[in-house]
Image (cartoon, rainbow, N blue to C red; front, side, top):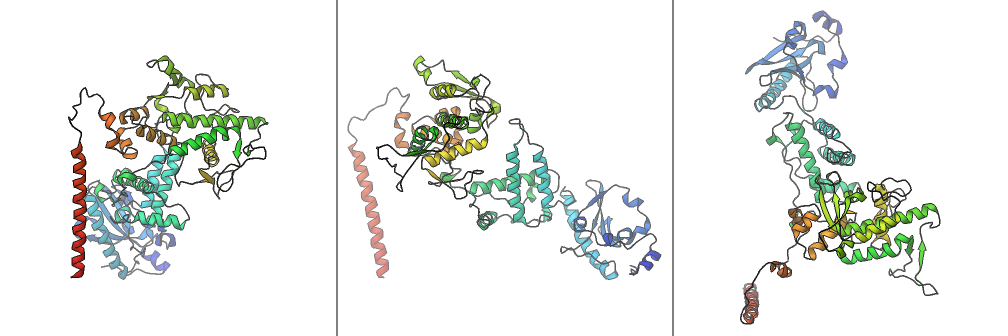
Length: 550
């Protein structure tokens, strides 16, 4: 029989010596209520008998019971022994709305029901081999990010970069905002919770005044959350793999699957011409509203300078512009990744002794070491860039074997990332392929590209691969020379056109039998097929007219 709980402090102390009316203990903080605390085997044996009050056992398990702790202000608890792990636990009882049963006879029935409900949940988790301790969504995210933070390394291919870690934090911040209550335990998240994430994500971006995220961006965010569930929740035994909520990826059409923004042939020709004639000389064209150059009274094209050419700083800026222009040319002619291009040293360039001497003045070999590649494997690239390298050696003061090819001429250090980004923005604006954005500033250059594409340094690599494919270069050759896979090229760049591949398909065939007569019958078949199609279309039209008249 449960005794009546006195409400006065004096009566509490007289009935339960040593117990004080501690308001913090009687009403634990929100953070303490849902936390479970694994206890050693002797924890409850050593607890004074006066602390365990109104004990009521669970009928189906002699090692589980509901009780009230005197040293916790009369708070109701469930004691549970996990046979699978051999650990003992206590759980403070509360409702889903955080209501705490009162230490009264009426509260005891409420506590009993909550205890049985909690026991069933814990028993099921124990039998499935899951941890009986709950894991909150926010804690899972924090654990995952803590693990990823330890992987940050500046040594290539030995971990992740700081930029990659910031991206992971941003991705999981979107996910946490979608979940809403990050204190929710992961085993209580419904399986269909994330099914409408795509629609929510796009709507929320619009509400924040941001660009609508690409489907590939949403897929990356979903993939990161999937990793968090697997590497934390599943790996540490909080849930089973089949208990992970559904995390569906956004399906992409095959012809739009990770399409790469490249330059058309006309866009590249205009960009190259404007860089060579104006941008690297510190000049900009004066155009009218129709984007046509104006002439002065002397018949010369109007231009204006945008760099103090006579100053030392201006001269260095001109050298940097020409170096970056040549970097564009090298990237276009080799397909090398921007990261590898920036880390290229003079010792990485070698002569191709397998080709005629005359061609060696055009073609060179680039050795890209493993630490400079995205894939973590070294490779050799053949490219017609000898002329560009020759010019770089003339304008650069750093030409020793171990010197980087693209160095800041005033400091002798690698060019900053900002210099690389600003240069392509300035070049695109000069070529009238883009305009300066309203949000542009000296601290953060922003442009609006006319075509709507996202033109970056990677676009030169994408353009190189696309142009080589259009020229008929075999896919295996491009894949090997650009350090990528044939499957990747086929998925992202290659579109097979049978009519254009006849010459390549005929290579290596010793004799091809020719038809004795002209293939007039092919034209006849074409005409027959056209007649059939016309007849079918006519019959369908007549049938629809009859149905309408009826």
